[in-house]
Image 1: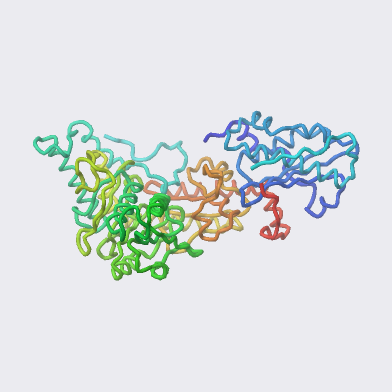
Image 2: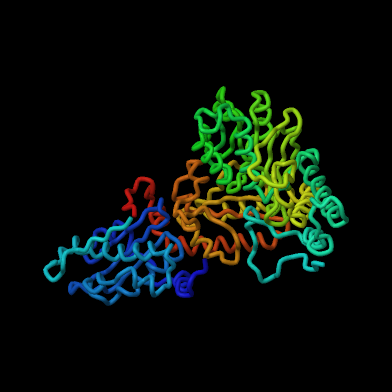
Length: 146
Length: 418
């Protein structure tokens, strides 16, 4: 299976790689939301960290990913897309948009789903830690996968 | 004539010889006349075209038999190891069954959990047809011993099928000892020797083998042709044919013979017989250097399978905290394979690695590098550097590597599994 040029490009030059500190440091920070999805046994672990302003704007995002090239590209792309967005805007990102942008084949759709999940999971974590008012937001959508 | 003696210089480094090999140009040269001038059907007994084809096949049979220490009459040609395994296992089970078709308790078969699918699946089919089977769980080093087979034997055991060398790991099972045990117990012994024959010395008499499968394309011959050794004396092994028709190949494999393919297979056997000893030493030195260098340069690098009871040309290595498919993407200039789930349709990591008790995470992190006749020192040098660079790139991205560096035990984390 050949990879799309965009997947290769993200693989070779991943955007926003890293973390905002050690796992202990970031756990203590209220302005940072952490999403870790997947499991090593499944061959994919995505870690997304978002730094959110008091106004609910994602000022910065960092990722790390253990997974195939498509998983790396999906998480790299996700960080690009959410930076500068409000958390509400970021929650509208759908895995299908990632599939389209990276031309992922059907067997790699789960990589895009993980990326979407990592965004939700990081925002949920930030909300919990910051005590952000959920007033303006609809209830957290629940995604389910096989 | 085929002039080129090596693959083109700009193609990737080919380290996937356990998947298939390049046909030796000498093999192709031997085959070509059998497509055109000597195109006859070996079954045509009354004219020159038929005789030429038959001569070509019988010379090939001599070379094939010599490579494994058999008599020419004991070798039958098939389409490859999958067919040889199917014919050996199903054909023997039908003949040696202890009860008629449609009944249960037809007999017990012993194999191992990390055999190739072309052995496991025929046995699973037989289980649906009234046979019992034991799948021996391999130990962590992957080597099946005669003791393990002995422990699995039952009074109703009719067949033991244990591969000689494992295709993913290169680990070598105790075949001569298992052969001796089977002959003592009067149980038919089949070995899938696809990865072994042509690389290691083989003698079906000394090694007490009843049925042995091998394939042309794993030893620099053409695809679509293989051999099955069927012992003719002490004991005379009988097989029920799977394919009926013109009665070719002693009635065990009907169908017009693939003359050019068989000629190429014979030539490949002849070349291996002459070259395997020196080639084995050369490959072993290169493989050992590959493994030593990678372990030295990259922390948490594990060579899977027994350290020494392994073929000289296969290396299965896990690089902790990086996923195999992404690693292959990072070494696109190396053609190799991975035990990672992402390389399989099932999204499950290699069942072979899992059967050794290797954690799923390390199974996902494995590469299989397999060397061959045209592998050079310079290619191994390049491969070492490419793999080191790719692993470092991916570890910089890996959340698992961060946790490892922070001293977190990954096995203690409860993951939000997908």
